[in-house]
Image 1 (cartoon, rainbow, N blue to C red):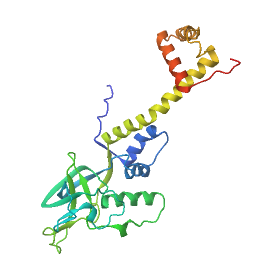
Image 2 (cartoon, helix red, strand yellow):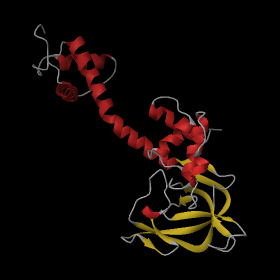
Image 3 (cartoon, one colour):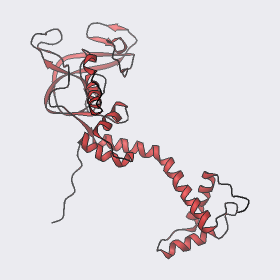
Image 4 (cartoon, rainbow, N blue to C red):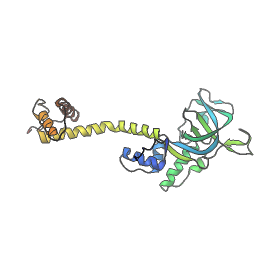
Amino acid sequence: MPKQAMPDLEWLTLDEAAVRLSPVIGHQITPSAVLRLALEERLTLSVYFPTAVFAREVIKEETNEPWIGNNVRRVGQWPPLLWGTLVDGYTLTFLEELQFLRGVFDAPLIGIERLEAEQLVAKSVGAADHTRSLYQREGCFVTDGSGRLFQLMRDHAEDFAINPDYRPAERLPEGTVFVIRTRAISDFERATTQEQSPRITTGLLKLVLGMALDSYAYDPRAPRGNTVPRIVDALARHGIEIDPKTVRHWLTEAAEEIEHIPKESD
């Protein structure tokens, strides 16, 4: 019975993501390196909640006001968030209604979710963990697939200031797992390929030009010489067909890109 292909997964663990990303980057990377890519804002980090967690939606709106009420603050006026990823000029309205979240959500890395990721990176390299002292009362944030922002909440029967029995979570819920969505990996692969594409093209053109110069006496100053038919014939002997116009195009492209100047003795 033929083997069935595995269906595409919605998300991968950090270990699985490291395996998937290693060929793209060009060397073996670790799960810690995957987290660092996310902290550098090159890769979208997500979290997986295996069980339902409490959260309240946060409405983000542009404003020029420095401060509005107790539950609406201009982002730049929050208690100092040391990593500086928040954008000034917005108000965040914390809604009262609690919701249940379960499954995969993206981590905006503006609250404790960032500190948790930094702590894992620090632990992986044997560095001292100083993140606990940086906790802020704003807590943990996640976004859903439509971009809605949520603040995670936890049960705290003694605190009724924000919502009866609940206040912002001081850390990610127990059992939370950092993951990477497969579409985020695809976006990273595409962006990395675009960055590498000019270097790869230049390298290939150097190979084309170098082999033509060395093996077929190619002279960029005499583009109508016998180099093109000789290359076409050589490829044909190995069962490879190619249009002479294609060969001439890439030889010309290589000579112009590399700006090769033939030696006088040539």
